[in-house]
Every structure is written in structure tokens, then in C-alpha cells.
Image 1 (spheres, rainbow, N blue to C red):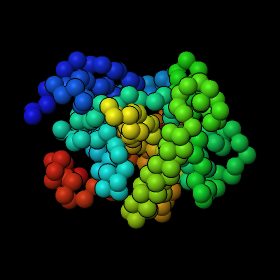
Image 2 (tube, rainbow, N blue to C red):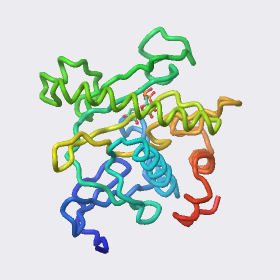
Image 3 (cartoon, rainbow, N blue to C red):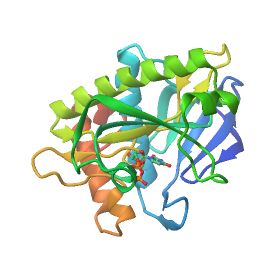
Image 4 (cartoon, rainbow, N blue to C red):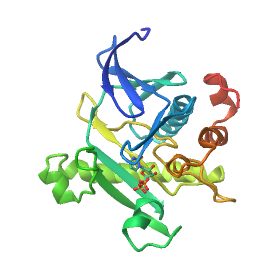
Length: 248
Ligand code: UDP
């Protein structure tokens, strides 16, 4: 069935979600808008949506191969991803392998301190409340999730971290931390949704420790898109480039 893109059903800060002629599927549009600090800092960086969609597609494919359910169906073309329709859970599930970012601002960890096992932190996705950190009791009392699914999310997240960290390290990249979101599919299964990109992850070059992610934008540095492109060139193989018609 050829996909027909219908009405916009959700507009986020960097992505839009469109209905399709298949009620079980949506098209996610990765836009060039970039924000930081809860939308306080905003810009539009040409090609950002293109690279984020391709990087996310690659990671979703790797995770599917490892047996993890994701919302990914296919990349229609860079920028547009056909995805399973999910009812999203308003949780930001953050995994940390190396101390960075807000963890250093809030707690006396040492910069670059490593965590094995990794730290999983769950925040409430709410602009109104400023994404506060949750604990299990608060998440359950707010009716955001039940105990069983919380346990499942923790288990799946650890598996995702292992698959991605091993892959990235084999390519010379450190994976300090990342944020993912989950939803329920039409059968009520917990499925990985959203994106996995330099907007939502930290990637550091193993040799130089150079930042290759949104931290460049947060700090007002140049070369944001070059860094995103570099991540793509590191993780994509020739087959991916041919499939998505990408020259790097
Ligand atoms: N993150 C995200 N969206 C958010 C908050 C965090 O994608 O609303 C990602 C962020 O890119 C990083 C990880 O989650 O890879 C941990 O972020 P942190 O808590 O350190 O916050 P930050 O320092 O980025 O504000």
C-alpha cells in the first residue's frame, strides 16, 4: 500500500506526526528546528531533520535486529519516517554511562565518572512542570505507568543501552547518556518510540573526547550540523547509504 500522508496530529519542538491512510501507522517528520533549555534557545539548522532521521533509523534497525520492539517501519526518505502509531507515555527515560550535563549540575559526581551498571533516571515529560525527576512511587501515584510496565521499561532500556553502547564503542564513539521515550502499540505492548539522535544523546569521540551532539548548540558553539553529519558518517555502512541515497 502506498503511504498517503494526512493531517498533522501532533506538533512537537523538533518533530511533527501525521496521520496516514493506514490507521495503525503515522509519518514522523523530522524538522530542522532545534531548541534547548525548555525552548528558551531556538534556531533552525538546515539539514538537521535529515541527519537526525537517518541516525534514528539506523539505531532503530539495530535495535529491531537485537529483538527490541520499536515504532520504526521504514524511512520513506530522509526526514520522513513511517512509524507504528503509539500512545506515548509521558516519561523521559534517561540512561547514563558517564557523568555529564544536569547530573553534574545537581550532584557531586566527578566529570566523566563512569557508571557500571548504568544509571537509569526517569523524568516526567511536562513543559508545565519543567520535566521533574520521578521515583517509582510518584510515577505510579500520578498514574503515568504501573509497576509491571515500569520494571519492563527498565529492563528494555538496559538492553537498548548495551546494544547501542557496544555498537558505538566499536565505531570509536563514547555514549555518555541518552533519552528515550516509550508508548503502547494498539495491542498494549510497550514499544520504543520517538527518536535516538544527537538531539537526544551525547556522543563523544573516544580519542579526542570531542562533543558530537546537541551540547554544541546548548553551548552556542559552531559546527552543530557538521557534528551530526560526522555521527552519521561513523555509524552508517555502505548499504545504508545506498538504501537511503546518501553521500557522505
Ligand atoms: N535529554 C533530552 N531531552 C530532555 C532532557 C535530556 O533528549 O528534555 C537528553 C540529553 O540530550 C542527554 C541526556 O538526555 O543526552 C541527559 O540530559 P541531562 O539530564 O544531562 O540534561 P542537559 O544537561 O542536557 O540539560
